[in-house]
Image 1 (tube, rainbow, N blue to C red):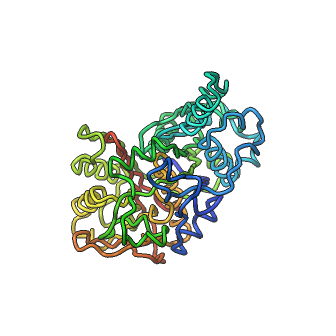
Image 2: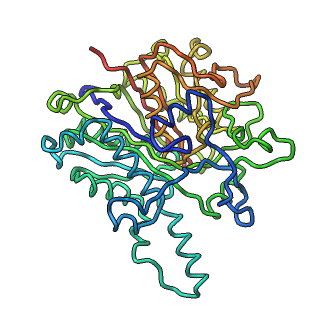
Length: 418
């Protein structure tokens, strides 16, 4: 990969906290943001255990028109984007930025479905067919990037990947491609998600992907233990909401603006399974991971930490473990692997962007976050960093995501050189 691309800023909001600092503290302390929520009324929802962001007030957004859009994924995305922009120091360089050369890519799996649900409920209650004039704009997945572009006055290429649980990683990779192609100097990329409607929650539940309550389950009295990736009693993912954003920059932009690289995006890969609507393909995931390492010039011996997709479903965790053994070979047992979904649940389209932000913190602090709620499974025998964060020398980390429909991505992040 000839033209280096650097990460110069990042931000996130999750059920562990309103920003990346709070999220990272929760992760390394082994805490969970998952709990039961009265708002997920069991008369309507098949599951009330979830990772919701507390205290989100979209109505307090600076732009009144933006507040009228109502969809939570827009508010979450705006918070994370502003945080990433500030983290990069770009808010202090307003007069030096070529705004026509800043790409904005924000993905989502479901967009503003909560807004749609609220308007449909309003129609039923009032017996009135009229809806908010802001409904259609608020539903659109590309509205997140559009509103961020409008708020920050960024006019470069815009894109909105809708690649299920891989959406955030796809946005980051497309941003890097825009920089490498010479179409942008900077790219603000990531994803946002909030899809808590009865139809979506119950749809995941009835397809047996979602964590389900069973008598005697260890989460029965303590919902924070419901998400348990790679554990012998894993029982499906816990649905969550959140957003994660990264700011990417070319080497020229780093030098011209005096930006501080947090990591180099040393390699990446995208591919499709062409296999099944929801079941992952080991062969294609293996190819995606191998290709990303090859592009980064990284061998199995160079991988210091692998941030897993790790959904806490029986099939995904088994397939991902098998693929890692194939790709890493003899080193597989000695490469630390963890999934932060045990702590923050599965944020669907936003997951891979939030996980990329966690990888940046891991590189910065030389600290790998744990897989919490872990009970060893004799069939899954890698080093999953159970329950406690691990101090270690980290130079190269890998983060992977796989989405329904067979859409995969892998990011290779490396400590900046020099």
